[in-house]
Length: 263
Image (cartoon, rainbow, N blue to C red; front, top):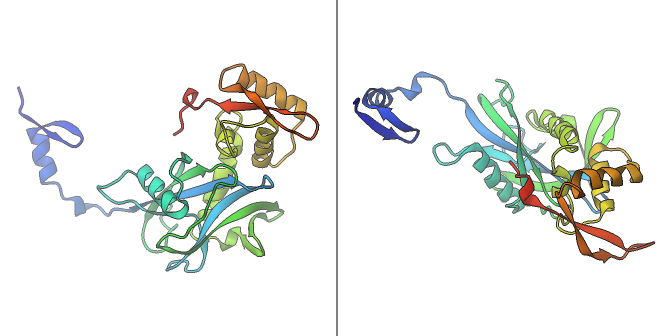
């Protein structure tokens, strides 16, 4: 039997072990790897919002950008990088984090070839608290608005346009919203944007869908889809208590998380 040894990747032969021990890792240029996070939430008036940070240093000093940071080599996965950076900028530890896309164009970062693995993080309505990390001089939650020129980002009197964003972050943001709109009909993303996904009314869920799609939806049709796709399939269950409403008490529901795991 051929002699074998173990490495972090598993059982290997002695020949492969010798190869790995003598391998010159500097023979090929290596790109750096970052995680960038599109952190989305809803405000009190049911508008879609995103977290942006103002960069403290070069490149793009003073520009607004998505939160993110470099992978700690040999210490963490890129998903762990995303979770660490998200916590540093928001204090959020349990957001619905989904891998979006890998952006690897050679010129996307003026410092060097940086490959970014982008993620979407969904934070419950009105629960996002921005805080600037070590590499940011400010962090703010911006309401996303749409006009003929594309998206703008508003926080009070401050308006940021797509062209104001650092790196290729406008491209990342556009893709994140497009993907969110595309998958909302078959994935549970909308529930993660509710104020409380374990106690919500149908009208609250409908408002999330309308926010993401940027369009009004028919009440009757939405209720039919809700009962067919969620209540009748056991993805949500009806609660015994109700919430007082303007006309009549609203029925409340609980989203059953373990029926569909998050990424």
